[in-house]
Image (cartoon, rainbow, N blue to C red; front, side):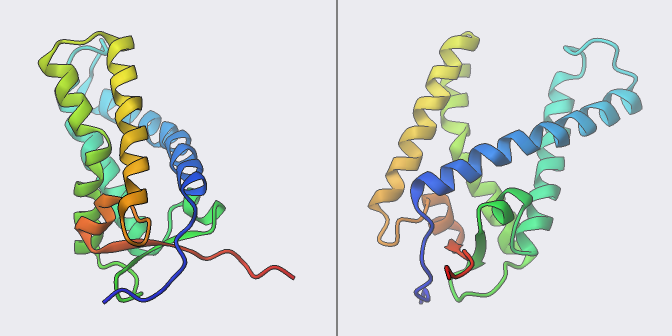
Length: 164
């Protein structure tokens, strides 16, 4: 039974989402450098699928570790916390489940792009369109939560400091 914590507004959650994406550039840079160095990859297209799998694991470690502590850096900035439905911090298992379900932000449009062999610009439009649809679908959740949170048994809550 979910406790009644306030849900952050959709614009605030999406701003946090965008900020998280910017911060992930640093994670990708360091992980890509480490992968390239350890695998002695000279061309970016060599070992592409191995790099993608490596980044999937690195992102998983990053998010599971920080979500099990309650917040990523972007979430701290936007005063958003992730909890289970009882209001407790996530276990690592629950955080992993949330990580896997969160790929619903990207896997459907990436699958469509792959099946129809879409180019970069076309794929970008499909991905951004799906992201907008996925975000708007949260309006149909009883507590305005994202659907991957509902599937994972988690919730984003507003932890803004009280206003004077």
